[in-house]
Image (tube, rainbow, N blue to C red; front, top):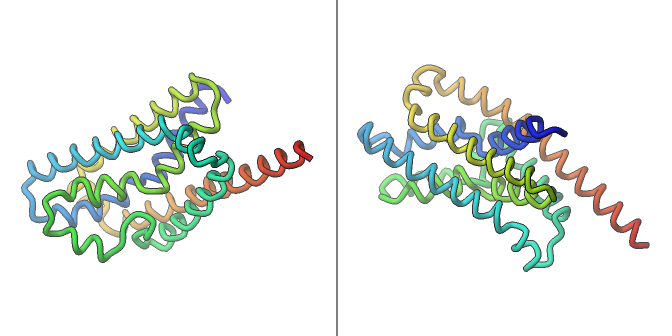
Length: 213
């Protein structure tokens, strides 16, 4: 796979699991009482923090796996199962319980730090995103590809920033129904990514065990 194809694959995969379009509905509901300037300031802080969290786990993920003695393929299988659960929620247009529950959204209405929780973590950078970036970084040995993964993370959250800053205009143009359609399509792609994670992880574990025998 050449660099452009790998960057495209990494960017699309991370963008699908972050799914900022789906997050717009929650973001609008949490910032409905804010002025335009307050909403934009909160969006910038939330997306910046989410990006930092994703980069942190991308860079330190291998160290964490070594610390806990976890093989990257074991995480790939577990992550694939988690992503498939999230994908099912997306295809049925439900708020994914992997990211945030309806009760947590309701309780967050009156808090001043909603840009930290629940927007940055876990709405944008939840367990699914963290698992994905760790698996990607752990699956590559080339520093060039690792750089492309970091670049894809930065591009994903740059797009997130644009989407959140334009959230009310996007909502006015495509409406709630349009967002549900987009979420279902992203759910289908995420399910395919989850299947790839699980099958690749199982095959790699099987190959490693066969070689050891």
